[in-house]
Image (cartoon, rainbow, N blue to C red; front, side, top):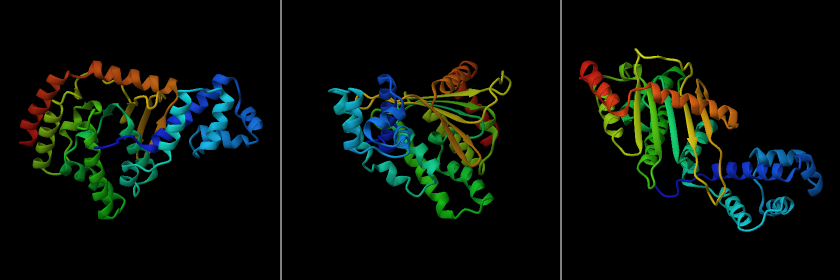
Length: 290
């Protein structure tokens, strides 16, 4: 996979940095707008990445905030890259906006933690298992077959993140009930469980099973915790994506993401270690799906 970065995510990175620089300068959004002859809403839309920022406007902001080289050049280059279309935008063009946004965000991450209480994580699914998982959604809401196949294809395409260079660091905690929950026939489940075992042996993949007879203190649905590398020396804060029935939502403030970080760390501490998890997957497969 070439150029895994997403222009959309780089735009969010730039917006967050502009907000940080404004706050560092001690200016409010209204004060910046007044000095530049802009509306206050324009500053807000730029900082929340509702609109992009033109190079000329960006230079004015950087002048006002006293940003010098080399950070100034980094931000100008980040703005240029965020205005371009990438492979991920082309792949997700036909998907709902929320789903497309998540795929673009995931493509930029260097580390991903995933808690899954209901299904095998998407990055570790086989094609047949993914199709069976999505088939129920398709039939319930009368979606066209082409929509299902696009989503299956996107899920398989996403899995290249685990084998690119450098690969995504992926850690999953999966509830034991997932190993027993059938999607498709026994053959589909058997192949999925074997694939899960093999995928868990990769050096950048950690799979842990939360046993059903252990302590279950986490009363939340599936979520993803993402960390990002610096791009052009511009950091990006951690993001949490929380799934619900009709989509997902993002948490970006430090207080909320910290709680999810602690939650995942607790899940890891409570779950079986990777070797014991593989043993449990294998035993469950032999007992239920062979």
